Image (cartoon, rainbow, N blue to C red; front, side, top):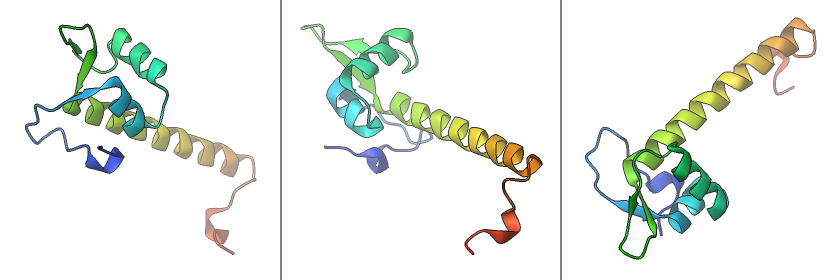
Length: 96
């Protein structure tokens, strides 16, 4: 079963499709949350099987991971800047 590190770069052609359960494990979230993401369009075009089950492209999962990672980094940088301005964080004393 794929893990977060198994998701390939969006620059590599990939036609793999993941089930909601697999995507939930990759993203470390619940299945209902993946369904909500899929239904909102956050995971791109989601295919449906004849039985109505969702299939999510691997490239969409990778793109979502990259987007979330970028948002997290930006939020962390903003928090560090606010902390520095408030005198709560000094990057020169890290690890001491």
